[in-house]
Image (cartoon, rainbow, N blue to C red; front, side, top):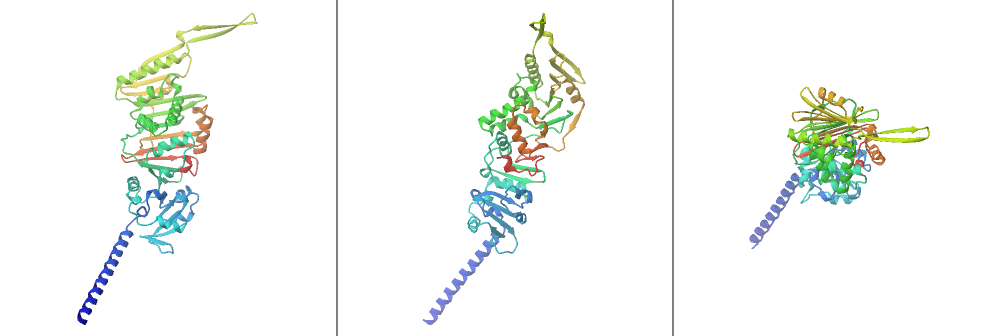
Length: 443
């Protein structure tokens, strides 16, 4: 009986020991698995307001409530009510330990958000795409839901351009620039690397497909903002004639790589469009319509005022069909046409060679554009350079919009460059305003 009891005790002891050993092994395996996890494995998407990886001073300045010492972190998580968790890997300290990270928090209650998750942020498709693109570089993950509400037409246009309809973005910072990225699988082509030279241009735009970019931007705006934005563009291009439609006359010409430049001579604003078309016949048809519409917008009457007997005035109004000058000639394989008032230095001038075209407001600009080219510094799908000191020339009756742009970007040169690799769209903004901060741009 004693032998049987001793045997039973030994069996139970062995079973308990085995269970303890197995539990220990499970805990070791669990810790090993946790040690290989990243910060995004310990939080969920709905809890995160922002997640800063390897934050620099510039990244931290985006959030004034963060401490400068956070530049030592592997990551900083920002939760609701601006509570924070500071993650450092492979260091010894007095904070809580989760996986390979020592965690310091602004409030101990935040630790309830930082733990092994069943559906972590790391499993989110948008986060995964952004992280794969950013790798171990400095970047900030921002859910779209945590971005401020846009209060001006400018900020809403920027929001539509930078974020589109993505549920989250990646933001990175250099000394003068901000780069915003979001997943985008739409096809895209490169902007031209060489365009006609327009001396003194204060605004330069290059597009791979301006038509697609414009229509996509409109889709991401509210109906009201879309109308306002299109009106702004139409006002800018009214120099080609009041009866010319941006959407129906000019935009169809900008489906392939193209450019737009604007310069000034005294109080005269000059515009130059360049690009190409797949259909030479359609191109000629559009240019015919432009010249016809522009001709109809020109005055064909002359008004003469006379003083009779030093007391009475007489006004003589007569139709003069010869007040409009039209020319057509060829040079170096280009077909050049112009329509303008006699004696005027501005009007509508176009040039075509095969499927390439130039459209401008002066014949002098056409001649210079045909003979001179300039190259882009970087390859892109779209880019803009804008001397903001010339802003009043384009927005003559829009003082509030001028003020919003100046407050947002300063008064120096604004540069915007868009890249697209087929999966991620990257838009870099640089201006004279330092620091340039994304959350301020979107307010």
